[in-house]
Image 1 (cartoon, rainbow, N blue to C red):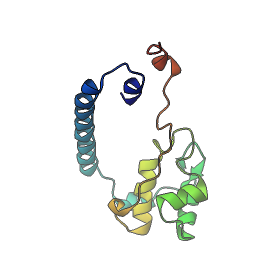
Image 2: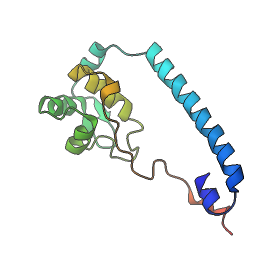
Image 3: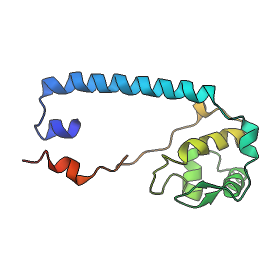
Length: 138
């Protein structure tokens, strides 16, 4: 929507109501996701039972054993794990492994996920096919 506005394909007057509607829908979906995740939360002990050879981050081939070792060596935040093991730095940019890394960290450290600093997201957050933008060119 912001790209369309910059390209002059949508007016400023149209942009704000549409953006407000989109943000409200996003908040609604995020709240539902939080509620759903609370209903079906996996007990911390189950995360600790994951075998060491199990891949947690498929893009960067990071195993449960490597996560346990890194946390034991003091890399006990999402950001420090990202630096130490490259978790969430592969093709998926953490969309696949990110949630479970937070769950595993909470189980290994005994800390609540709410207190953990979110990973820094770098553009592109999600790839966009150039063809989808080409139809808006002049």
